[in-house]
Image 1: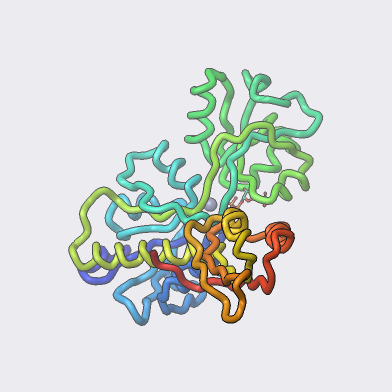
Image 2: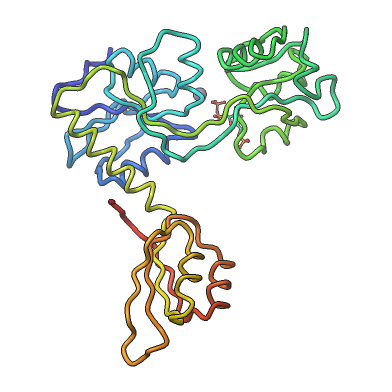
Length: 297
Ligand code: PRP
Ligand code: ZN
């Protein structure tokens, strides 16, 4: 039996192990939470903030948040949507986290009888996502039979229990290893932070706000770079236009040079080698690209 969350400590439900676990722990650590995960433990205490981590199976996270067994949770959107479609839940997305991106796809043997959604009528689809699959079928008016499984769905066609499958695809390696090809994406997913619609006690609500602001800072800064370069005065506008995802670069005089200025900017989008080559072609020199550790706007 899991104790109800205390009034003071924010309880975050997280996947114990699996596709989201490591990235979730890394995100919380980047937000300044200090904790250690020991094998087998259900609860991890954060040392420097009034926060506890509840380590559970991903499928349980939405209902824990809904039932007040945890204040918030981090879970794959695929799991959230599936649980929303198969039960009554008070759990919604508070913030998208951008990691653990994957797709829920329909897939079938490369040269089998099912090659597209049009071929699904009267066939069997194996899945661990009956809710999302059923929603897709009813939206398309397709009458097919679901074979609900607990795992190893990719084996269903070869052992003859279904003509196609509906499963998560990330790198695509599992499909390929089983001679399957995806023919339809029915849900795009990423890690999301979820909460219920109920109000939290004031202290916890403040803590959650603080955490959300820190997560924003971590996620915006992770792809961001600080660019410094020297540019011909005449090309400053053209050069600024090339800097990806920066709005107002800082332009400063360079001692002893009337024709050149120093330009500095935060780029919130990926800076490719091609961008640097284009900058150089416009006369930019001494181009430095620096990582940004934290960013708060
Ligand atoms: C999912 C899915 C596939 C695999 C796909 O399983 O069921 O087996 O990941 O990933 P890939 O495209 O990179 O090969 P997951 O690891 O989430 O475990 P689960 O099936 O036990 O939930
Ligand atoms: Zn799972």
